[in-house]
Length: 376
Image 1 (tube, one colour):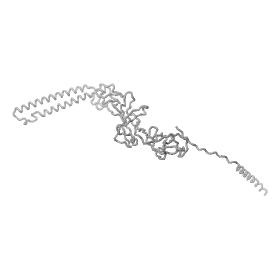
Image 2 (cartoon, helix red, strand yellow):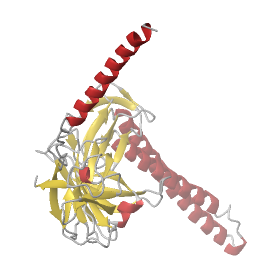
Image 3 (cartoon, one colour):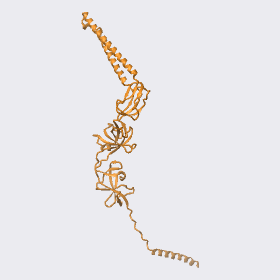
């Protein structure tokens, strides 16, 4: 029994300590909490209202020749002269003789054919004389001319002699033409793009000696999708500006003059632009095969907003500010683009211009969020 008080005493001490700790804790003043300040994001804005814009249509293409010709001799023979202008990159004028083929055998053939023609004409004259004599002999015999056969009157012989004359005349004309063909001429004003002919080579009717393209014009085939086609008036010539990443700082003026009558598989229309004098002296040439970007003059858009591409979110809306500097979504539809700018039609009829648009919206923006506007 003496041990019981000894056990109760420590428990009482512990209970008193716990009670005292709780009493002290309850008497401590509560800590003061500071109010959390609202974080307000600073955004760059610009003010804009719907206006009538005329952004150009942007497309692309590859430069193609207006005329291109492969030079092939019409006769065979040894090449005895090559014009100094007949080199790649040189401009030649229409009618310039580019090569000469040895013409001695063709001159001989012409003389021979002219001699054959003379013989045929002589034979015809002789047949005419004999026919007249046969006619007189028949009449002197007291017979009627109607009773004489054509063979007796030598009509078939005369017809044959006339046919021989025509045949020889055709041979003479061909011999003269072949003599002219001993020179190969430039068919139009052109620039030489290749040459295989050299002095001493044998020209052949099946072997090309070079190629050239016209310098009068060049063509560019420009694809226009249905949305672009609506904005380009092809009822009259349309101006085009061509630029190439391979020729920085340069541009060429062209005109769309016609369209390909066939559509491509994705219903794209091919507009054909012509560029005059693409190889003018003193200017960088518009090389055949050059890839170019084309800026096509287009018709006016309906009243629209011009905004930077960065402001258009998910291709569906803009972030704008209301009168309380809070964010709101402004639904919009893309109409056109030019460079880094796009042109939008506002779908929200409840909002009134001018609109204050956020130029670089954040992915964390939420409708109704308070922001601090600043000008760029």
